[in-house]
Image (cartoon, rainbow, N blue to C red; front, top):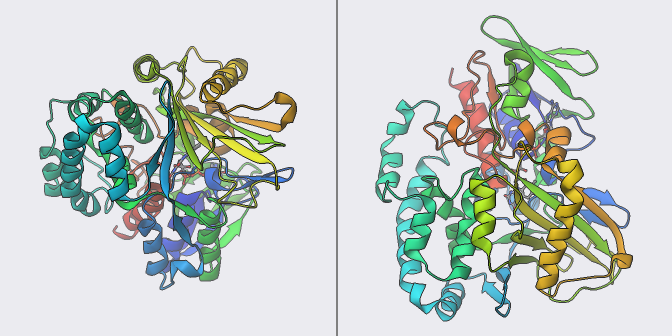
Length: 480
Ligand SMILES: Cc1cc2nc3c(=O)[nH]c(=O)nc-3n(C[C@H](O)[C@H](O)[C@H](O)COP(=O)(O)OP(=O)(O)OC[C@H]3O[C@@H](n4cnc5c(N)ncnc54)[C@H](O)[C@@H]3O)c2cc1C
């Protein structure tokens, strides 16, 4: 049997390992850390059990497809509950608003809060409903590696449904006028490494799937997702080695031949799939390209010895001057003076996360990555202050004496711990994307038996996307 090494057991690497095993490869996963899951793997902190990354879970059908490919029922490994609300929104100066988790109720609520925008929202959803099947047939099905690939009729049809002269912000502004709805929509391009200046109609798909299909939470916390994938991979016979960090991929003129670990050990293979960030992994061979990174996150976890009022599983705190915050983030690449804070409080959904009577909070702010002008290590305490101040303005506060711990992640955490290129979760910035649109390709330019999965390559970041990327990386190997 032909040997395949998968570098990294994040969600992308786990998916790749499963697909590769199903295609007959003998698969060895080399994970640098002591556990699988990457950004979605659980972290024990005293009596608390933290999910350090994802929390908004959409499109469970994309995970289901992996279990189905292996002839298994996902429900035997992983169960998702649909949440009754998408999010509780605190818009400065307005009472809190719960955005319901079902389409009909959500639309009713949107009609109540922004009747002037109801028609625009319906038009937008109708348009997205017409392109969603095209997305399944295109970006969810295959990577786009060359400009020629972009002539795919499905992609062209998608593009033609939107005005090519309008950027994302102009499209939002055309469909909705309510400040709350604009603030809600403006953030989505960043989840794909793009901005409100981008020609990024695809960014509307995230809120579309949230409204049309709902937001989910896995039983056992987000960490249950990679744990279920790891279990399936092991059952299929995939071998895992933890604490095995790959230093570089080795190869000759035309092929990758294996990897060298940081310990100096060399392991040979017929092919390599990397879940490690593409640019970071290739730096020893190709040098640092010196490209600007895309976006990242600044996060804080707090374990608080009391119950806190005003929470829901997903909370969005939006300052009145949110437009300035987006200008700072998107146009100036600085940390917003008044950030929009996403706050996650999953204690009720995930009983193991916090001890009884206590509260686990997790705040996430979209941020520039390791860019000139931001010294994350020095500035992080000021950013924590800004985040707490925004939460306080929504009435969410606690006494620092009640904090049992505070745990901060900056883009430098993602660079050092996970190997993300300059801390970016989405690879390099837009000029280095395929036609400014698509993330890096899943294939190596030099070695045709080296392919990539994970958030820095297509179809992009986010757990459902990186799960698809695992399949892309394996499909590219088997087609040559
Ligand atoms: C704060 C935050 C919030 C997020 N929110 C959401 C959300 O709500 N919903 C959503 O869907 N997504 C969300 N995401 C994005 C999502 O977490 C990521 O896109 C996804 O987890 C990335 O998976 P990955 O496969 O790219 O690998 P990673 O999770 O980055 O894992 C890569 C793995 O490879 C290992 N590795 C790296 N280099 C090497 C090496 N050289 N040798 C051996 N092993 C190596 C690492 O140790 C790691 O285990 C969020 C991310 C963050 C950080």
